[in-house]
Length: 397
Image 1: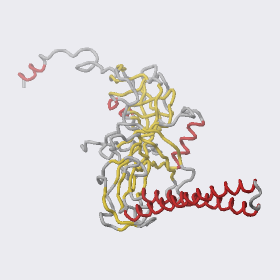
Image 2: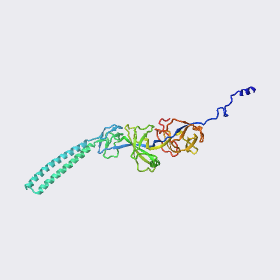
Image 3: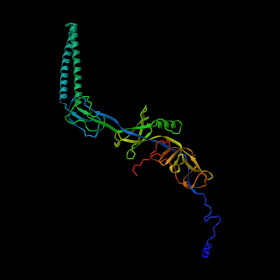
Image 4: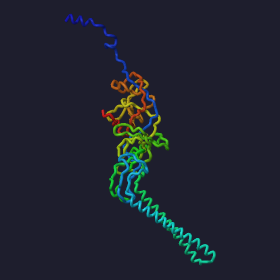
């Protein structure tokens, strides 16, 4: 016991202040100064693709299909011959109409000569006026017969041309619904094939009336700016998470609301030169709705929630004391929150060291080299509860 007491007394004296390391200083926190900036706001809407033009190939005459002249699923041009119908009866009808026209022309020549002779005889007072009138009427009847025969030739020629069924539009053609040897009739219910023009392509988007009203109010009160004549650009996001390489434009909105879903249909026109987009595909569209001036973006890691679920952030005032600010957020932009109220430009927002401080504590600021900018990732829809929406994960991890 004597030895232990001696060893305990050999320790170094404590420095002034009562503790072995002295009184602790204020904790260090990482801060950034909030700067207003201009951001472009977008909304993400679901939609489905629709062909730009659709044409059903149908026969205009009756007959037997002799040959199919296209490759199923391939690209066809407007006016390209797709099917050939047996043309023998229509060729015979055309030749008969031509013969009838020649006979009518011969009758017209004979009637014209008689009318000319009758005119000369009338001037010589060799025939009566009645005989001349009969000759002139016969000439006119022969001329009308020629006109009728010419019309018959045109009709027969048209029907003969209809034996070659042509593509009404250019585009991608589907499978053939008839085979060689099939009997087809004019104006039949079943189409022979369907052609769809896929470049460009329509995308029908669905927007709720709630979002539409909120957007209109934002434009009216000046929070959003967008030129009236500008058509909003549209970026499509495919099922695999990749963006369509060709941006489109919003064309128009329907004038009526779907009563079952309380939503409005917006139609966008998107270039599709590689024909990646096919009719009926489900896509997501990012539509730019306007620009926000003097916007404040707050990193998501700086936002916390109290027991009531209200979002708040911690700032450092001029005396380096921590203050808590309740926030009103509108949406996420990438890794940032767009803040409506609760913060002001120039305030020092605390990002690092949040676990070591509480409101009212003294803290030592450390400036962070972090620029809060608008992320070029997909913006989310409005979330009235202020919760961050689910982010897309193309890789599946």
